[in-house]
Image 1 (tube, rainbow over the protein chains, first blue to last red):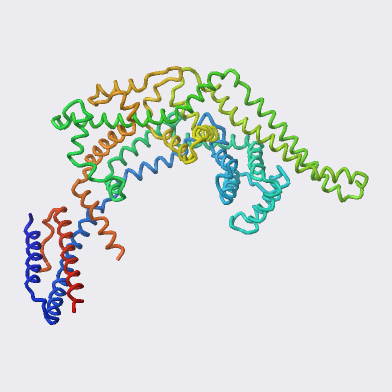
Image 2 (tube, each protein chain N blue to C red; image 1 turned 180 degrees about the vertical axis):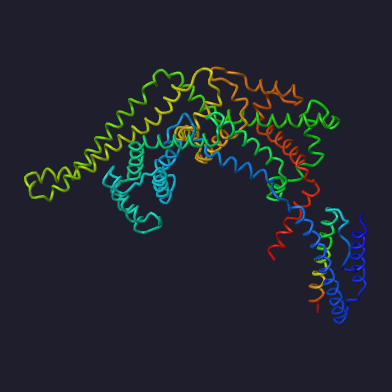
Length: 535
Length: 40
């Protein structure tokens, strides 16, 4: 024990000794006793402050580390590349610009709130403006109610909590509960009639990006994933990020004790890790990193296999899909044209109803005006169904165009992630009996996986193959000195992944050159420091 | 006890233990003050 520790310990014990022999039998004695206690108390507070100052100084020194500047540099490079979704060969500008997500959200408006409905309409209008298309209330004629609402929407666009907007919505909603669907379809129609411009402008923008970067499309995508890989690898060993995980409580230093880690390495290595050379240890740790990536791929594959199975089923019928999109599209556009004409006729009827020249037809005109909302709503319902079918046909047609037997599972996942509504609906159907599952969260997890750069295994499994993946993984890593049996992947995947993740985290902590004692100190002192900062 | 004692040579663990110890001592003194101060 250090001298000062002994000294303070002696100081405390001798003071307690002094107090124990002081008489307390009379009021006067007790008063003197309390006086002495107060003196010792004040002295102890001063000692405590000196200790706290030392703790704070050490804490501040340890946490005063800056993030690796390369993280910002690479992030800037990724930002300069922009959005690779804009280059997705499977998508039209409608999906590339995220308009599909906006209309999907409107389609499921009952899952959100009134504010979200308005935000989505605004977002859609803004996307059009980015491409030089300024929408006005005159563009919203899908139904009388759409126009009524949008008129007020444009007036109150900067204030969604406006009572006028709320009241207008409320009044219309009870007359026409499908109002949000009408707006959604009106927006889709607006995209359709402007789609050529979107395609032309987006192609020009994309060509400009590629020419500025002096890359072709494939190299551009490759560069995006390379940069992301570089970023992840630097972030994994970044001192500030690692220390923050301990400060935030995500990681606990006791989980990385020498004893725990030794147990884990002994359990998972087929060689004696601790008696291996540093080079061999490095090799084994790298193998664990590689295994973790493979397990993450396998985990996603198993979790979302039902989606791949659905795509495979579609692929079997691919011959039937060759012109199905075009047929459905024609059918839909025909109905939309009918709707446009009926809306125009209704407007004429409204004008004529009060025009003396049409007095002989007034009764017929008034009857047509009276029946118009119901008829038009019926037509919009049919159009809505056609749009749902059209979305499905878009996925089918892409399968017919892009998928063959040699297509990889990775590419199949790319198809899924390219069509938001399709993926959303499949996930929703999968968990229809489990209302606790957050469908959007599940979908986001899948999209995040698609955008991360480690997909080696799934890139090598072909659609036509039915490989025994667990056997492939276990054989692969057994020859890399890792003890892994098929059962680990089949029955115990979650726990097994947790163990591997722990080894990889431990490896990264060591690579970061952070001192484990410092981490432990920060972890233990953080509540003290946070109390000091509050005072 | 002098207040300008040297703590920099203490390990992190010993420093935190020392903090714990002085805190316990302060709690003891507070208790003594409270109890003996109110006895008639």
